[in-house]
Length: 382
Image (tube, rainbow, N blue to C red; front, side, top):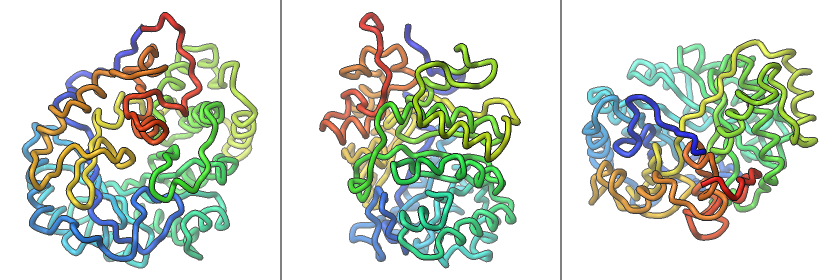
């Protein structure tokens, strides 16, 4: 059986849902897991203001509804031309979401001006439930309280807040407490990043496949407390959501047999922190993956399947991003679920398809199986 990820009116062969743009690698932080290995100053070769406007124009040539431009970094607030780029996107009806760093640049006045310019969604990173854990990752004293204040500041200005959290061995036992903070802060979305060994993330500890499975079941539980929960580089979360929606645990939201001790600890801690679930399941399960519904543009214009998959597909200085997305052979194979190993014979290969970035990081083959997934498809699942 192949689970289809198709949605009415959504043709992921023609247009991505999200286009990530690493506007700069300049950032005032030095986070231990940073994909970009961000530094204090812009790197040579960063897109100029004029090139940035041309890139936004190219996104405006996609058919409506146009992809969402997710401006990330480094720190997007380090770009002096950010307001002009946001204004051009608004003219072209290209939605923009921002992922700023929590630094002194994120002031009330700056947030207010961005909100007036049309920015409605921003994401803030929170990697621990305590100052010790969060600041151990972020590398800046006082960052924990500043992060909580930043979430509140965005909310007061009418911004929809997404909280991003990287899951790793150093913080996973705090995830129930982080869920409480996310809910109590009024954030609308909790996006959990599953570690890929790139950039500074090479020095951090990934979970085992069994632990990843436990965390995914925990996140299904967390998605019943009024916030949208989604994952990055863990498309197997969708399989877990589907199994919970139709399986023996659907009636009471408890995980089916086979979950491990990490899930048991996190599930118990979640109920201790937040009580019984309060809403219907709000887990996001669109069938996207690196290169399918997602494309990434680096600070120097290089086009990649995602920010965690550093394979060059072209450069926006020379290539049309729509043509690259639609026609590049690697992206066509990714969207066709033309995978090797377990991912290639899995009954969830359309809905999930595994992390192409992790496959590449672990084997050098972006079409190989995702080693972080615990699922073992039957031999007949073709």
